[in-house]
Image (cartoon, rainbow, N blue to C red; front, side, top):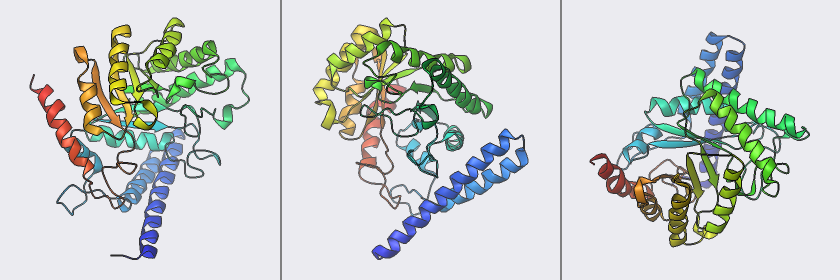
Length: 345
């Protein structure tokens, strides 16, 4: 057993290693923008070294650290969901000074995911901070923009991010314009109480996506796992205003989103009404039950589920030392029940 003081010191050192790595990635992005590929490569090498000094992950019965994506693949994970903030390094942003989940880090993560042979969903928060039903703050840089310029900014930023990913051959495999947007996005202009403005902002994002990657599936993400009336209200309003999607994404946390039966009913009804694919794009509890509900949808319309923050939050599949928890075993069962079975059809 190590002392609490030593444990805290080690954890602080790990955080510093990751901060240094992301700082190097930001410098690499700036060097690339200045057409200095040699300098950019050096910064990327330094970033990789810092990350290797940081958090390590292990499989069951193995004391040798492995790439976390390789472990996840073994247990059936085939998609990673990345969130991106506008300027998370702002004082009131998601990651003051450090800028976690900015464009530079997203580019690096996209490279790692593709190298591992996995796919990824890109989640545009259109904020410097968390965007969810209780808060959809505009980026600080967009605070005072007139509405027409705000729309242009959404479109141009979307294009800029996707062009950067395209330049390194790591375009996402699915994109969601906004996170948990049942109450809107980019408040106050894009609040659900102003559905025309909300639709305009969504259309600006979708237009940017289509300019760069017209064939990539688009998801609309609602934090309404078991709330059918609210889901139908929102989707009817947006579809009536010309917004479309390929996939309906739902969050499902039992604390906020009703029972598992409510989730099943909502998914079935949305499939019946709109004919869209369904993904539970955020969940944590009831892992096998949620997977069973999604994969049990009619006509193969339930496409899967994304556990939220699986490495270190709530029922995390690794502990703070990178060791696997019992929750990782749940994905052995899910893989055998649904992924392996489907691959044999």
